Amino acid sequence: MDPNPTTFPILSYVMSKLPTIGPRHTEFDIEQPPPSTAVAEPLFDLTERMPRLTDPSVIAAMRSAVSEVSQARSVLKTIGNRPDHETVDTARKKLAEIESQLSKELEEIVLTPRPSEVERMEWRAELAEREKEKREKAERERRIYKAVISLDEMHEAYERMAREAEAKLARIYEAAVEGRGGGEEESGGDAVEEEVNEEVVGVLQEGMGKGIERVDLSNRRLRILPEAFGRLRGLVVLNLANNQLEAIPDSIGGLEHLEELYLASNLLDSLPDSIGLLFNLKILDVSGNKLVSFPDSICQCRSLVELDASFNRLAYLPTNIGFELVKLRRLLIQLNKLRSLPTSICEMTSLQILDVHFNELRGLPLAIGRLTNLEILNLSSNFSDMTELPDTLGDLSNLKELDLSNNQIHALPDTFGRLDKLTKLNLEENPLVIPPKEVVSEGVEAVKVFMAKRWLDILVEEERRSMLEVQEPAQTGWLTRSLSRSTSWLSTVASEVSGYVRNAGKSTVDPYLDQQL
Image 1 (cartoon, rainbow, N blue to C red):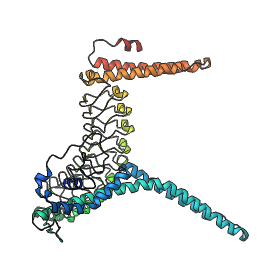
Image 2: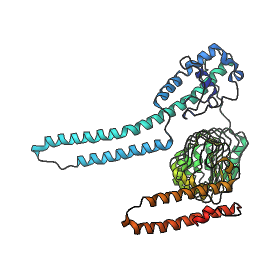
Image 3: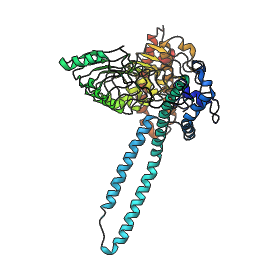
Image 4: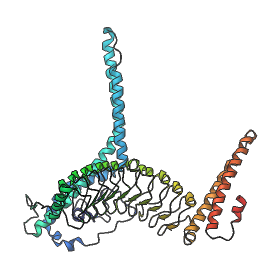
């Protein structure tokens, strides 16, 4: 909620100097709840880079420029943290359902058969009372969902206000450095109309003339992409990586045959809604930008097999992204600000690589085990936020590589031993108790054997307890059948565990497992 000193260095500095707020010992991002551990201080001394910040007249001008931000922050601190994107989407859906139900009920009231003239007055009063009751009930149901949406909108407005305030403070400082006095901003500014790069003009002329399929304009320091690019309808590959683009024109939606789009290492803070018209797009690389969210329309790019959005500022993914991008094989979203993954991501059954390291994840969706084609999963460096994993992790039957390092995980899920194909595992920098450190130090096979034995012990104990609960003689037949099924099931599990032991290079099978077999 407080401005992050890395993202908003000047704003953070000025707000720390406001008398009504005073200095703060920890800073955290405007959309995130306060972390359990202190966030690192900026890697530089701001006053060394910007010495005029110590000028009383400059700081006074800056304080007045951030008064609205300060007031908004005080309000947000009172009403709470920002709800996650999926919660907001659910609230909007519930509101729509309430409105639909209310319309239906009001229509039924209107269509109620009319009585005789004598009873009409009473009938109208009764209808009015019923309508009032329905509206009041709907309003009570709407209230909580409206509050969620309103809180989200307030946080969004505060974030926008912070970005504008940072830019305004930078202009005030520049004015002071240039001696324009008092830190006042110049009206009108000194924006210069950008000229379109000559090479871009040449590409457009060539494309209009005979049509081209591939365009590579990477590393050209481009600041503008003309709207006319949308007319190159034959384009299959477009590479605009490593430029200075701050926006992509809406006309890009006209590239109906585009299969590969590379926008890495630019200055983009958003993508146009028209990107959803790229129905044939297979590869999209928007890494190394300033994206805070994806447009919901990206879900319509149903041909995507690779999406790289690493090194951005994403706080959430579209709620329905997993329901639509079912062909996706590689999802790279590391180094963002994701606090959760939408539950729909569990529908990406073609997914083979999922990289979400260096985010702020608090866990995984419970249905994560449905990603049965997943081979590489990187959950490292979510630090204090990642404390546990769901038992369904053991259903990732094709998982080969798993990185859980630099988290706060105390125990692996009991089903971990079922990850038959796992050959690479990183558990460093976790306060692990299960399995113990001495087992972890022996490698991935030792961890799998330990967890498989633990799982078998749990199953055996559960069976023992269930048998003790059966006391009635009349249930003897049921008990026999149950024991038969349970014995068969445990025998299968025991066989799997003994296989783990043999694969780990053990010379003999555990006597306890022999007994179970």
